[in-house]
Image 1 (cartoon, helix red, strand yellow):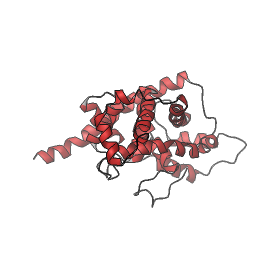
Image 2: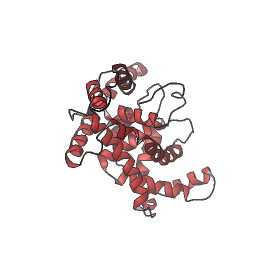
Image 3: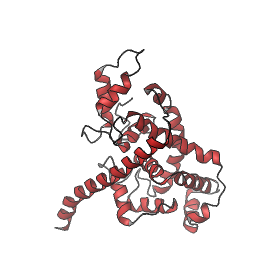
Image 4: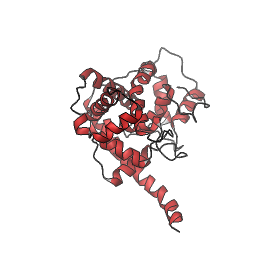
Length: 265
């Protein structure tokens, strides 16, 4: 009976978390759009950034691998809580559960995969600010500045809390690299979000793809396919997490399940 109840309540919890976090993300995006100058003025300028996005994601992959403790390619709820603790992101158990549900985009697998983990860190950066990326960099210095085996590193992590790790010198340049990647990923979404409500629609993609008058119009089937690849839940709207997930995939970081699928901007 308990299992049946759990199966019935899980979709409700997911929808509640989705609505709540979508609202917070949309509010943060509106504030960001008001307070910052526009970064992108064309779709081509975004496409040209994809190789740079890929370079910036390598550090995130190192953090993901560290917290994927059983090396199964996913981070489960408990692993995520430990990771958030090391990054000094303070959340209640319910909030951590909600974040896990929200970022578990490919719910076919029980846990957050790398692409979803990168989405998670970008959302934390938007909501909590650049301290998140500074702690990611400090954690990397701590992890890979140590000598020894992976087991030695794991034991060392157990002996230190993040407050001690945060004293490790991390250059402003190194921290700024992750900030730069996240800033541009978020600003790319704002470029397409015409209504400023945190939801991208197909007409937004079509308008942006065709607004350069000196170029030929992009065929409708191409814009339709591009939007379809981003609209993961097939509700006719693309939120920030779906956009980030798609761009990360296009930048070259694919899961084994995605490797056989063709998808490009």
